[in-house]
Length: 331
Ligand SMILES: NC(=O)c1ccc[n+]([C@@H]2O[C@H](COP(=O)([O-])OP(=O)(O)OC[C@H]3O[C@@H](n4cnc5c(N)ncnc54)[C@H](OP(=O)(O)O)[C@@H]3O)[C@@H](O)[C@H]2O)c1
Image 1 (cartoon, helix red, strand yellow):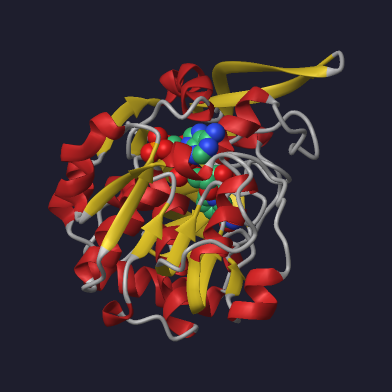
Image 2: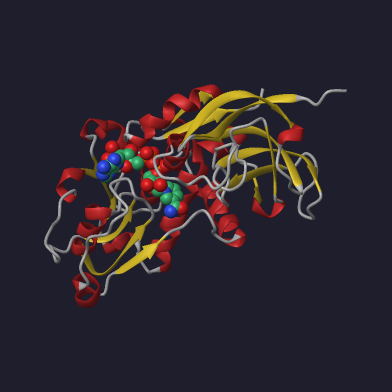
């Protein structure tokens, strides 16, 4: 009997570059692993755009199935935590870079990388959250670990209309923070206010090199941009403030000075989602299940088919996606 086939996006090496295709594969093609998951849904994050475009050489071996996130059902497992029928999520751990990821009907992987999908979320809702939303909550938790509280003052969120930004705004507003959304798309004001932003600021105000110490404004910030934006945030954090820094939408450089650290005691808190410990992931997903407004999540989400991921990749890299994208993988 021939093996069941399923659709997949595959990235192959082509000369010095790479070639992306959409085709059918079967289980025998999957790399080894102690758990087989039938993928129901995935998503498109900024990093998925990077993997699909090859803009930064992140892929460690070819051929590669990209997709840094997946949600689905365990079909088979040798791992002590998982049984057939369990509803699971995977985010990061090198999926799509070193290990075949979520843009295929099935994924064989290490059961250590899975977390249980909270009962409150369907597979599609879990992927509407995805790495972006889980990172947004990691950032909120990081600010609070540093002692930032709602009555301390305004919190700035950069990349506000994007995935991390949209979910961060809704989570912070729900916790009672006054959120200022930094965006290049001021036309998205109704959307950003609907998510919970108290006011908007043009990201152009942060985009160029600024003075090393500026007027103290932010009690905290969640930054998805890096580069000058992160440097200007540091220069305008209040005494003792914290920025949770997680992204590079403006650039991976960090042209800053020591003054805000040495003279204002600010904290730059790096936030990594890829290798976050399982316990932290479980805490984060539990907090998302307890707090995230599913109506707001729906209002920031669009759904596409697996084959359509290929054409969305350049759009997300160009900052043209609003909110989140769910990819329907299962039939
Ligand atoms: N460290 C981690 O583990 C981790 C996890 C998740 C995400 N990230 C990073 O966080 C960033 C955001 O991810 P995402 O999935 O939310 O991406 P996204 O949906 O594409 O959102 C990025 C947003 O950044 C803003 N932006 C675009 N170009 C910019 C520029 N040149 N300068 C300043 N802002 C710009 C845009 O928002 P506006 O139009 O509203 O300005 C855009 O929507 C990415 O760099 C991603 O790699 C890191």
